[in-house]
Length: 189
Image (cartoon, rainbow, N blue to C red):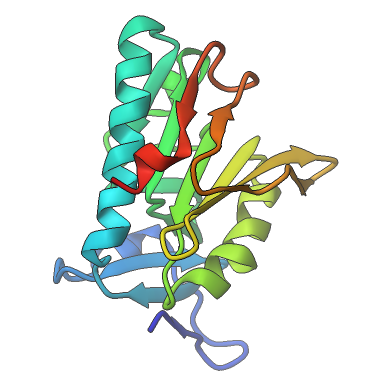
């Protein structure tokens, strides 16, 4: 279960420095608006889906070197009180300057989260609002259970949902990855 540890009103707001001091114990720690979120390590099915997407995008980026993809653990530092570890992120070549010794310091072009029972509510609400606030142009949610991919595009500081894609449909995302088309079934292998 993902847990938000919220201090009493007017008390402690956690920062990147607090985050950097957290233990390396296999749990995923994130700070959103100064609140600490803790979730257990992802399940194998969750990891398989992300690895498959990474493989698909990695092959594409070899042919079309338009940016880089990253997997956790890597920090995306939006501000001193907002640090997350998405399941996958993409930086176009024009945003490679965001890479620092600490992680990615600013909004990637794409953030992908694979849903799980412990993170779905946070991914759909809190993180969606956070990513929109910091102008992440594209946000994808992958549900390994329902075998569905939901793509969102930022418009007027909010995400606009594109049609959800299910089962074995072919995926194309021209705005992000020109000429990339893949079969959604390749994520579930």
